[in-house]
Image (cartoon, rainbow, N blue to C red):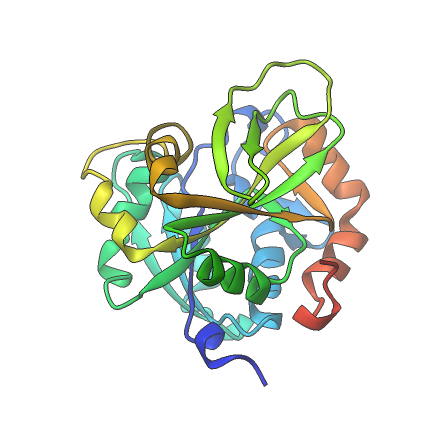
Length: 252
């Protein structure tokens, strides 16, 4: 049986970006709906949440929102319950979360996920880690052999985030943001009603309040560039398998 706290958890999916870097290979579709194998990338994320008993979803839509909303409707076909928070003008990742505040006011904490990256992980472990650390925000991170295009996360021995380093373009190993977070609801009060970036404007300001990072070791992919989208196509069978894993089967 799922933990009752987990089954009540809301997952916010950031799916409103314009995906300009991927436009050359996916010209008419919002990036999260890009096909990976026989299904859309966003279906991988929904399957992952569903199979770990997280069934309440808020999709922050924007660019070509109607395609995403008509594809998933209320979520019942996928075994989840979906609400939509549609931005009429680009709000950035931080602004999109603020816009969804009405769907999150009763939550003590909630999950946030980038709609263009997949991290094989156990959500219950991240939620427990967040509670144990008494963090204001917790994030999943992944050590990768080439961190140059991501920017890196610097941690202390207690797994507390002490700095975010800008992307360097250099091919070197590092710990990167895997695009999955647990927010305390109070973070919403720290985001203004204006366009802003979660990564650039919000996270750095929270460091002195207690941001912690839990390292993951499973499959990780970001489809933000044509090269990585091609790689996702090559590994789509592994991604489907990883998305379907129950929490007890996920590599810690």
